[in-house]
Amino acid sequence: MAIRVTIDGRPVDATLNDSPAARDFAGLLPLTLDLEDFHQTERIADLPRRLTTSGAPDPAVPRAGDLAYYAPWGNLALYYRDGDSASADLLILGHVDADAARLGTADRITIETAS
Image 1 (cartoon, rainbow, N blue to C red):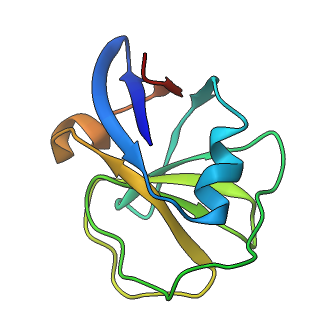
Image 2 (image 1 turned 180 degrees about the horizontal axis):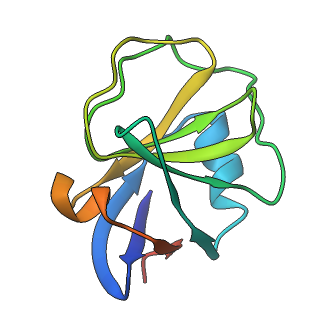
């Protein structure tokens, strides 16, 4: 599914995969979220509710640009650096087509379906 992510007022293209969690996330759109840094690897924000984790794909190591859901905390993560390892608690939802420097300084994002 094509989505649009606006990072600090500048739109970029992005896609969601076809996982149950990504479809559940799409049902929350549009969303505007304030981000904070986490471990100098990702920008995170709380979601308005938890997403489904049923039918989750096999764990994968997150890569820069990945949009992910961390189930234990119920938060969204936008990776600007590659992650260290795969975790069953981290569900990759999709990918944002923006350079790592831009992702790493993002303070506010709006995510909506692409028109």
